[in-house]
Each structure stands twice: as structure tokens, then as C-alpha cells.
Image 1: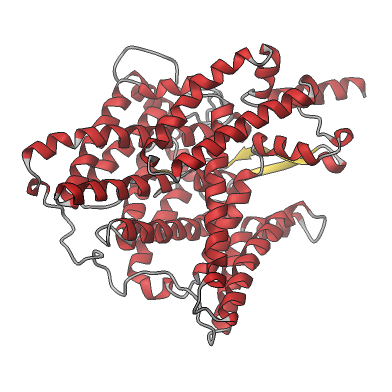
Image 2 (image 1 turned 45 degrees about the vertical axis):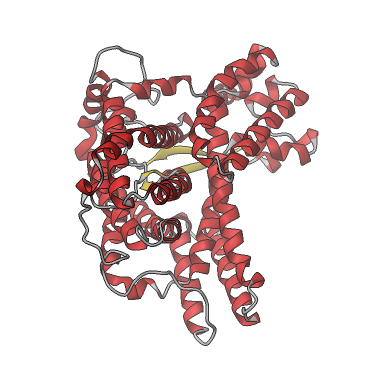
Length: 523
């Protein structure tokens, strides 16, 4: 890279000047635009493309199918694939942080289902109502980007980030496990179908983890180990799909995609937005406010996680510019009756990890990985979504990949996201011998009873989010996420400031570097 910015240059400094955040993001990222493509010419990037293509396609199929259920087929799998492909290509080229991956999310699907139910009750055309809610929401997001609203994210801390990331990871794990064991509960299921589904899913998960960890072994050469590690998930998907084809006599669930490229119901692609009464057009701004909160928090929290200091990114963030692009994409998707897409936490974090060079620090049971550098580029997100666009014209081929394999990939991504989450690491401390606690900054500075109390509070917050998400009041899910911010500051009453600061520290990178320097001096 010809230039470097400080990794903490996140562009979240408060200002009352409109467009200041957008201008800062643009000027920060523009010098790297050509380099973003140069950095994409690498074998690691190719491995990331193959891995995330399958992951994003699985996400589009899963959430597209769910959208079809909650909207009675008015927005289905094809619409989700189109939105993911087109929106992802646009975001990869125009965003400030291209490592972020856009996609459908559970909360957005839930919101869409609630909106569909309200439209039925009021006898309003759903797609026209959906379009206007999306247009209002997109407009609100654009306005928020102009007035530098993403600067509010400076009040978010690791406390909230960890809970949100853990929630999304647990959703992936739970949904994958439910899908894997669903054939066992079906009354008309066959033993062969049940067993093959289990073998394919667990096989994909285990093989992905095994191959990914191969880079940490001493076998063969470093170049071969790195190749196997980078291409591990793609190899696992290929192997398990091939195994399923060999067992073609056993009927297993295939992706529910149509045989040809068309809307799910056969409707025209462009929505007739003026089929909605005038009063309803303006009334749509009400639910659009809630959708805006959801999209704003989903996008910005994931952007914070992607730009975490532990990832050691060098080109700076683009909170305001990213929000502007998502706002425009939301407007366009709404006009065509396509699902709204936003930063997908699990996919974005796995994208960063797939492009990272890591080193193992510590020894014995205290070994852990630390990201040394990440190949920051626009090539991988661009071609991930180009492949998804191409898949639209290869739907019969997509059906050859069993859903069990895709859910095995979901399971792998969920656990990969939990790895490196300090919240999850502290949960593990409950079953760890105190003499074998890792020598992290918070373990050295905070008594174990205080660590456990902090972790219990996070678990309670995670449980509250989970319960609310699954309740009839699920539309308030984003509000509770926002409430975690003032709650975190209120926790100062229960903890000593030094303890809370250590537990909620943004990153232990500097502390680790200082420890290494001290060890070198003693040596």
C-alpha cells in the first residue's frame, strides 16, 4: 500500500456540519480505491470468493424461503437472490468499507412479515405498501448519512458489540441445528434421509473446521498448508456435495428455487407504487421509522465489528458513506419489490477472517490466534456477488447442492463468529481451571468474580434480545439493542471504573504488544 491511515481513524468525530462525515469517508478511502483492486489479485482472495459465494447464496436461499412464507410468496427466493447480487455489487464498488457483506437478515424478514399482516388487516396492497415503507426508510437513511448520525456509534462499546455479534452467531447455530434435525421429527421421514442429512451437515461443518485449522499444523510445506486452510470451506462443500450425488438414491432436501428466472408470483418486476391510497403513502412513514432504526443499527454495529482494532485494518472506515449507499439500495429494492439488504454480521466477520493472515500467540493451553494483517480489497466482495448474479441463470445446478450442506456451512460460520468474541471467551472461563486462565489484559487486571458478574449481565441481555426477537413484539428488537448503550453507562454503578474499562476495552492489541516488549526487555 502506498499510504496508511491510523486504524482508529473511524470518522466518528462529532460535528454539526452537514455532509462532513460523508466528505471525510470519501477523502479517506479515495486514495486506496485503485489499491483495493490491486490487493484483490491474490490466491487468498480467490479462496474467500468461493467460500463467501456459497455462504451468501445459502443465506439468500434460506431467508428468501422464509420471506416467501411470511409474505405468502410475494417476496421469495428469486427476489432475495437478485437483491443480494445487485446490492452486493453496488456496495462493493461504492462503499467506504467493502469488506462488509450485505444480505438478508432475520430481523428484517420478521419486520416484513409483520408489515404483510398489517396490510392484510387494513386491506392494503402489500407490495405497494412495502415499496413506500422502503422508500421512506431509504430516504431517512440518506438524511441520517448527511447529518453524520453514524457518529452516534462512538457511544457504543465492546459490551454492546459482543452481545450483538453473539446473538447473530447463536441465531445461525440454532437455525442450522433445527434444520439438521428437522427430518428426525417429520412423521413421513425415512431413516436414510435422516442419517444422510446429519452426515452431510456435520461433515461439512467438521471438514471445514479441520481444513481451516490445517494451517496451524507442522505438516507439508507452509504454502500447501495455507492453501488448504484458505480453501477449506470451499473444499468441504465440494466434497460433501459430491458425496450426496453418489448417494442419489436417498431423497434429501434441495434448495427451493424456481426452474426459471422470474418473480415468485409471476408479477411484473416494477411495483405499481401509486396503487396505494394517498393517506397510506404518508402513513407509511410511521413503520418506516422502525425499519430505519433496524437498518441503521444493523449496518453500523456490523461496520463497527468489521473495523474492530483486533482486525488491524489500515485503510480506515466509512460509516457515513456505507449508510448512504445502503439507503439508496433500500430505495431501489423497494421500487422492484425486492427484500431490503443490510450488513450481514456473520458473513462480514467471516469475510474479514478469510482474508486475514494470523499468528498464534501464547503457549500450551493459552494459545490463541491474532490477526496480523487483512488483505483489504474490493475484488472479493465484487466477484462474490457477481457469482450470485450468475447463479440466477444456473438455478437447476444450484438445486444439486443439498440444503444439509448449506446448513453445515451455516453451523461453521456461527461457531467461527463466536471464536474471538471476548464474551464467549469469558463464558468458557466458568469451566476453566483458574490456574490455566489465559493471560489476557482483563484477567490480569480484574478479579475473577467481577469478570463473571460482567459476563452474567451480558448473558441476561442476550437472553432478553432472544426472547423479544421471538415474541409478538419482535418489531421492537432494534429498540432494545439501542437501549443497551445507556444501560452500559449505567453499569458504572456496579463496577469500579478501572475494572469496567478493562472488561470493555476496545482491543487488547496494545496491551499484548507492551507485554511482548516487557518480555523482550527481561530476556
